[in-house]
Image (cartoon, rainbow, N blue to C red; front, side, top):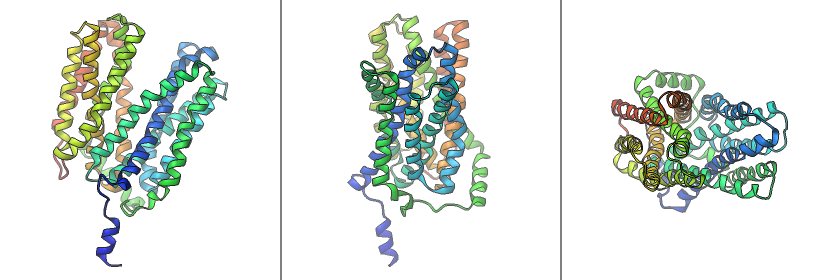
Length: 408
């Protein structure tokens, strides 16, 4: 076979080709199913807690178990992906573990067993990202912003649709049966990946697995780079702000603005709808004009809107502003992920994804603690100033990141 023939066979398909779009959509749909499962757990938590007679401390520890599993598995999952090259295989394992862990909630009875199931769910959920993000990034090197935006879009859809489906089932089913049925979403996606994309791990566009020596040497070199840590901290500050808003915005809406539960639901839905609109737009635009301008615009606007929210008292205007906030806040998520992929060698993209997610998780864990201390001492309004300061710091860190040969 001539070199020209080989190149033609491995050349990427046009972005509008079905052979390009179908794998993107399938992987992104499966990503949405992992978010569906986690969102289902959160909706089941009150029923689970009442049904098992758990107090608030025990209920809170169940959520903590989920995050413990995530933090423990973050770095190892990226290393596993890069050293084995089994990106599609690991995605399938992640989906199957999500199914098992959620379904098991409806079967086990002991508190320790429940914590183990949720720890496993945290592991399964975090395993997905380094495998899927690196696979999409390598497959579409010129359109990473688009690929990451579609990947994030389905995550938002899973977050929105999972609780709705679970809530509807709870009208006539027990929380145990609801958990078992909702777990099927992931197994259906796992079967689809196994049928249609199982050969994706041997795709000619995938990088060859590095030797252990080359891998560890390259990873150590990247993690010693101060610019890389500026990037991680920027991503961490943005995610800290997002986590803090998700935790304290409902409290502010209820306690300070006196909104009804229905109005609170509309406000939180508006936050997600803003993200649904923004992510495809931001990802595609970043492919054309670069990542840095989109990240700066998104985070700068987020800073302004968070501060502006502290001055709004009219509920209708507040909900509208929350939607605008969601537009800018979620717009930067796929762009930051794409930018990290631009800065990473193909053999290390999964590990660098895991490293970024680890920093984000650790920084996000501080948001409820610091926000709670501020709220107790100075009132809930002070939390929003803290979150605005966090995303403002992310802006300065973004400016400090040096340019590379890749699109900035």
